[in-house]
Length: 245
Ligand code: MG
Image (cartoon, rainbow, N blue to C red; front, top):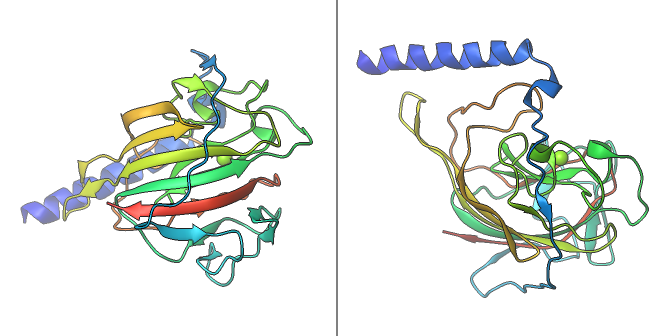
């Protein structure tokens, strides 16, 4: 009985959160201050340790699929995969809970667009929580939407972006959110992120699924994929591996 009551409450609060979001504008959740300080990162390459699962080795997309199933159709060339505009996000066939993820990314050398329109992609932890990929080398946008942010939730500690056209790294330690049987949140997702070897997120607690419009909120889930965003810009990825924790 108690479980049923809580379930109803959870559903009602989720519906309310979703409805509130529908009445908001995207700008309502943009945070422009403070501006993370710009620093120069060192050089970092990291080959996969022996117990890692190789998600992308530069040769094929065998471990990936399209958002709604079927083969992933991004371009694979020169040991990298690149977003093909309009092909949609791609995600790992395997699903994960707690993990350490290494991924390398590169925004286009030819600079086009500004703010969110320049080299935009993203890496979704468990499909719902976007670690932003964006060219923020001399490109101002809202602080909680720049590279190294958890989109519209967590501003990075510094701006450790390299120049467009250069390879960059993210290393992510991810603790999945946990849920009670009735769907309510037991413990939030936590993340630590290094960009180019520099700490940009220090064991932060997420407020829910990242949202373009409105406030984040949690919806119960179990293990999920790592997903890469097609935001229409030809961003590339390489050397992707993961260690389950
Ligand atoms: Mg993005």
